[in-house]
Length: 208
Image (cartoon, rainbow, N blue to C red; front, side):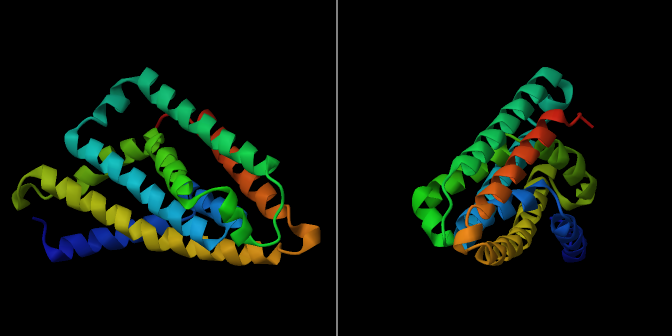
């Protein structure tokens, strides 16, 4: 297995990468705005589960198919974009609530977890990221590549959780600001617009 120093350097790089603003942060933020901290934290967990799916694909070598099968890549990308837009529209059409906790009753946390995991699983960019990024940190002299890829992928996933969790808590605090009667629809509007924007970005992005 890789040395402790090697893994520590990789973990710091993964933490810095996950802390940078990106689609996953925005997705978690949108959930916290609409449904409070619990939904945001559950969404962060769901994204992590989706990440693990892509780690398994990278370890198995199946993610390479996305690089050499443009039609498959586009099909997965458009499916993910459509699902994000669908979730965004549902949020825009949802009635306003005075407190984030009331929204939780409308959408069970298990469904929030499922939505987040599915969104991440339908993101082909994640599969290509793991396929391109992880092998660079495999040490040829440290044993078989498979276990190393699995360990590195787990590190990336685990370092994403605290970053996304902080975003979830920040989003919940922002939602409380909108908790008055006059402003109660704004969390859903912001959350829905964010998801629709992410969906459009996913649909229009080009393969790298």
